[in-house]
Image (cartoon, rainbow over all chains, first blue to last red; front, side, top):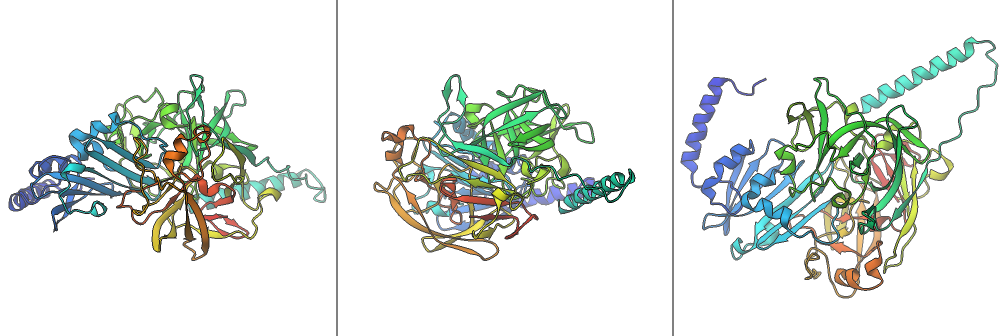
Length: 159
Length: 414
């Protein structure tokens, strides 16, 4: 059963365009390391919606609701680039989309010692990716570019 | 699930009645009933060792608990294979087998629309993709007939959906070495690993594969259950019983996995602490004065994982997420169940991981009770107490909705 009727889709698309125009470049949500402005495709690719955008001291956070129920948060530095993404919810987000050009670094990164199935811990150059979780409870994690984290931002707040 | 169980129990009761009435039909109603069959052997030996052998060498596991199981083509007593080094995991649900060591061809489950049922398993360090097949599974003397089981890396389904491979590192965990075991036996305190896959076709769980694969809902009876719940008897939970180990560790450790709770003389409950887990299979732990509401006890975690910025982390490559306090720390912990019951005054040790990983003889040790590492600082409400929790304890895991003499699952008791 379609969620929207054709007429509604048209209206929704129009509203969406208006919203994007009105809020750009404030709304972004983007791929790690990319400019905030690039992002609409990200939300579209993930079949997601932006739930909220909030200015915090030193950065801006866009919260994206994924269809799986997982929340993806993208952290934008004052200069306009996404310096971190974080997630939590019933499933892992599509990191290939959220990490963009950095995704391939995950596979090529040296495997840490003592790996198990519950933890993800990768440090490859500037890129840090961490995650944990288990069945029934869900998953959480984050990825950030160490050199791009604005000064004064507490890493503990990136979640 | 409760309904399913009620239906099964009802069916069982009906069959029982039929059997009784048929038995009585032959003649005298005063004949002595046949003695009940002897209880099944419900104990399998488990071991923490260096893991399965690949190309002549063990893969080098650490703090990983293994059992040996036998898998048969459904209905067959000859097309069977005994597989060693199946990881015993109390924080997942269902049996998953790696395709490379599997010599049997097991039938794939088919959905009502004719598509094959294939699963993307959400482990963190990589993705595990493969069909859900049916197998008769025997562990010790217990058998689960026509059990849905995942085969990871099955060559019949080589194409992985992008939203499965993209969920973790992009690394396929489809070999024994990359997965770290010949399979994994998920015996956590629930029947199923996914609470709503019968109504919600979420990315990263089940897929219907025809010419291509798309996310699908799956009837609960077709999902991979905790195999214990499908045993004919001793199916209300399991007990992991491991001896104590020296704080400096050991090369190997051997113990028992016992099926059923209060069903036989060897699995009776005693005076242990019974902690009910919440719907996420989690408990509340208090550490460093902080209450960590999303904590869990997990035989499948190889370390003790928590966030404590006051403990120095290691600098050696590959160890930077583990703690390196120099001298061993002894820290306190208390655990509270969802039923309000407390386990107070527990202690655990945090060793210097760099020392642990390099000092002889520990470099040949596979049992490392003091291995402890970080969780991302954002994970401030989790304490993940891994296999070290089980060393020197007898830990019972009761399945949701099942009753024992000391409570109703889901619970963990020790």
